[in-house]
Length: 70
Image 1 (cartoon, helix red, strand yellow):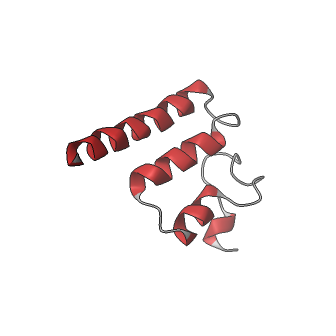
Image 2 (spheres, rainbow, N blue to C red):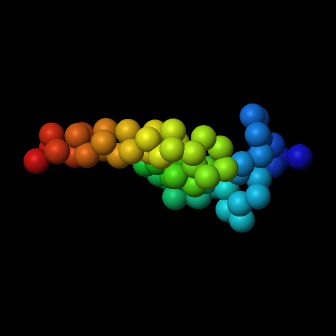
């Protein structure tokens, strides 16, 4: 069994056609963006609004970081 086929702490990713980690790795997505993808794809199956807040938190971090560059 490949590591991608295993999941620690639930099965909320197993039923997805493409798991978030597969998409993230294939596209070399940076950490904050990867977290947004992870939380936004699982929110209905795992932690509900808490995961939406986590996704928003990472988006806010990205906005703050990008705003400093302007």
